[in-house]
Amino acid sequence: MREIGIGILGGGYMGKAHAVAMSAVGAVFNTALRPRLEMVCASSDESAERYRMAYGFARATSDWRVLVNDPKVEAIIIALPPLYHREIAEAAFALGKPVFCEKPLGGSFEDAMAMTQAAQASGVPNMIGFNYIRTPASQFARQLIANGEIGDVTWFRGEHTEDFYADPNEPATWRAVGTANGTMGDLAPHMINAALALIGPIRSVMGDVETVIRDRDGGTVTNDDHAQIMCRFDSGVMGHMYFSRVSTGRKMGYAYEVIGTKGAIRFDQEDQNAIWVYKMDDPIEIRGFRKILTGPQHPDYEVFCQGPGHGTGYQDQIIIEARDFLQAIETGAPVWPTFQDGLEVSKVVYAALRSAQEKSWVSVA
Image 1 (spheres, one colour):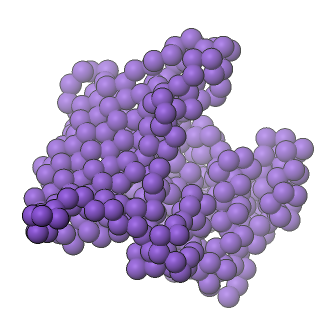
Image 2 (image 1 turned 180 degrees about the vertical axis):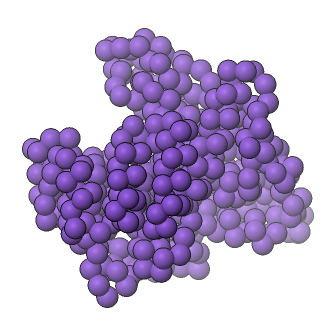
């Protein structure tokens, strides 16, 4: 075992999640690399110091360049708004430091392209944060589909729906401005990533976007509140996805349905420790969707809990990501999803946005 110094940019919602994950991953997975929380960066010296004390970092700074250039920071996690991703990632790659970046890759498609090129040119490990696909249930769903348990896939339906902006009295924030902060930039990437992971590459899309509440206290909303995509996968499978931050009543509506010639699968993140499976070859008198609770027999479950049905949580997804990032650093081999995988998601996002403008089908390629 050896220590590795971790620097995290951002101490808020995701910064805290990654700090906790890096503190726990060694004990959970017995990793060969043991993270040391070396430095945290925030928008002010005061907030950075507050995060340092709360999470157990050795040092704190309000200057991202100080963190990236520090020799004791050996790997970097970017947990800031998308606008800041590109410059930080490019600087880290130039120094040969591995980078884990929260989705989306950057504030624009150009950012995503540049970041991916920088990652590939550097040759160092890189990953993007798509945590929801890592639940034991969704990992198991991927296995069932890949093994042909539901036959040939004929249809995919996915959604990522929440209601944090459903209240018209909610004031405008940074989320109200910029493509990367709208629903297509913020929520859609998670479900598009799921579609690519479960079904495969997407060939073409028809997109539609809308701002439901344009005027909010403090400013005008200039990005999308909800959006939908019709799509065709390279395999010929039809699909549809819907994304919303104004979906009243939905808190974590990351859900999908996969229809096959021999069965079907349903999943909803609000019940993340179960999937529903239908098999055509079941006796007709008991044929129907069955609820399967995840347990030690499912991927990445037993290290968290030895009791079936006891369940894993959101933080556990981030710990699994931390394990994968450390594995990529240790072995030097790419671990899914890399920046290239993040770029594939961005291609779908921006093809759909272009489709919405042109009101026609658009090729993702």
